[in-house]
Amino acid sequence: MLVDIIESHLKDIISPLLQRFANAKILLTPQEMQVASLVKDGKTSKEIADVLNVSETTVNFHRKNLRVKFGLRNKRTNLRSYLMSISQ
Image (tube, rainbow, N blue to C red; front, side, top):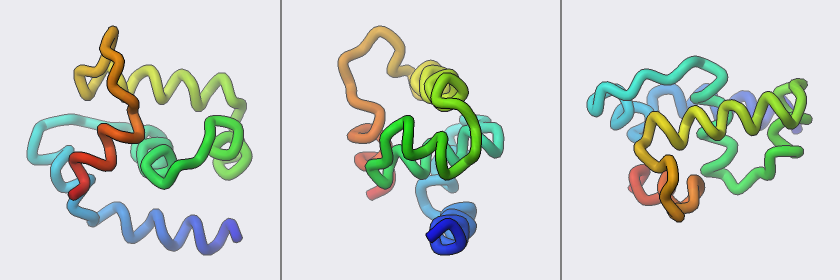
């Protein structure tokens, strides 16, 4: 299962979603890219933590940073919904 997830996310490195981040000058760390991709896939923070072998607190830290970088801070927009909308 982990190999499939890793393979899928390696393909995401060149995905239109990540290309849009680059074009918009949104600089994400490698771990933020992984978290964003897994959030877009509908994974919970706990599931992401298990996949990436980090704490759930670390995942929540990255999710917060993603919301700030995408301008979603203090807005009611769901992070997953936002990521899905810009990936289309």
